[in-house]
Amino acid sequence: MAGTEVDGPAEAAPEAILRRQSLRESAARTYARALPIVPVRARGLTIEGADGRRYLDCLSGAGTLALGHNHPVVLEAVRGVLDSGAPLHVLDLATPVKDAFTTELFANLPPALAAHARIQFCGPAGTDAVEAALTLVRAATGRSGLLAFTGAYHGMTAGALAASGGAREGRVTRLPFPQDRHCPFGVGGPEGAALAAHWTESLLDDPKSGIPRPAGMILEAVQGEGGVLPAPDDWLRRMRAITEARDIPLIADEVQTGVGRTGTFWGVDHAGVVPDVMVLSKAIGGSLPLAVVVYHSDLDVWQPGAHAGTFRGNQLAMAAGTATLAYVRQNRLAERAAALGARMLAALHGLAAAHPCVAEVRGRGLMIGIEFTDPDDPDTPGNGAAPALAAAVRQECLDRGLIVELGGRHSAVVRLLPPLTLTDEQATAVLDRLADAVAAAERARHRRLTPRNPQ
Ligand code: PMP
Image (cartoon, rainbow, N blue to C red; front, side, top):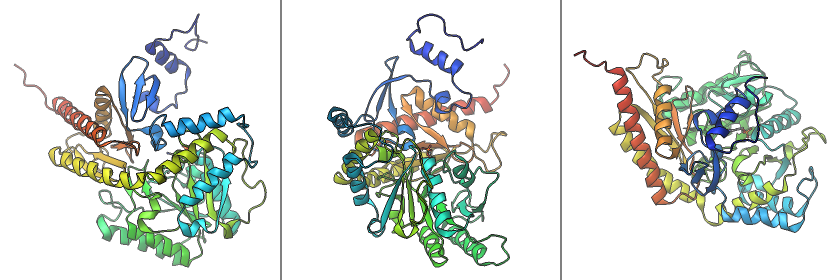
């Protein structure tokens, strides 16, 4: 078939590898389109491409690498399992490696949940753990509907997709997620968040709202893919109070916010909220695939096999995850993320003040977003979001050896998810390159929109 042939021995040059990728891999591929890099080595914040170029990686495997690439404690843990002769694949059987992982994870849970926690090991993607959480609360409540939020992202399997903001079908009631710049009530701030909570409460209590009693509410403490939108603490506490009073299990999707990322060990810790169910993946596997659901034992009424999957026993991931969780705890990396994140946000506010194209800077800990706007560009969507400018900034960043990610409703938010081990000097280098990239993208946009005078 034309276009997929590979003749002779494969050429190892990076351009050849990228060319073969574009010929052979799916049209649905994502990061690979914006990041034509062939990584061959990586350590900490740095990735080295096959062409010898080095990049500061603020994508971190979509927020997976709490300790950056190839952290020594992770490598040691993985080597330990390999050298021990332990089986690498054991379905959901008990092993010392899994036992240690569960002990370390429970030691880091909110204590009120840890005291009654059960754990379900899932297939190794966040989306599978979301499915498990939905099955769990449906079995426990005997109800089927779900409360979820505008802008949410929970994964790509059927139930998780239905719970996400882009869904077009499913048994999901969509509730407003509070935010300032694009507040659904047009007011933002604490008032907008209070209105969002009031809307939720009135829907649940109105016998004619058309919404049957739901099996659960699922939320992110900071919406990541939605564009880095931190939930206000008061609003989160109200969601806890509203669900508790109505006997609705609260599911916190901590797939991206977990393990110190937002400046506390879990995103819900900022508000002191204890959910009934927590969905965990990404960083808990220490850069290898792992996903679990932890939940209050009262909910543990589902049947054997109610959620299953072949790859629930990845021993290397559990060992890497145990090492990562312990390292984050022992070295207080959540606190470090809070302090460094605050410093970076302050610097980015300075950037926003200098560049009118920066509409908003927001985040929590080392989960940071910069939203771009372009009022003069006729192609911007109705709310002033500027995806083309954000994409230009991402490209300018790449040209300067900085890898960032885009997110948000219109892909107009540049996202930073650096490792929690980021040093002050590295943070400064990231901010310098970013500031330079924003200035370059703005200059290019200006040139594009300002027609030259014919001479
Ligand atoms: N929930 C959240 C909050 C996420 O950010 C993601 C992934 N970005 C998922 C679920 C899905 O995880 P996975 O891609 O591993 O299925």
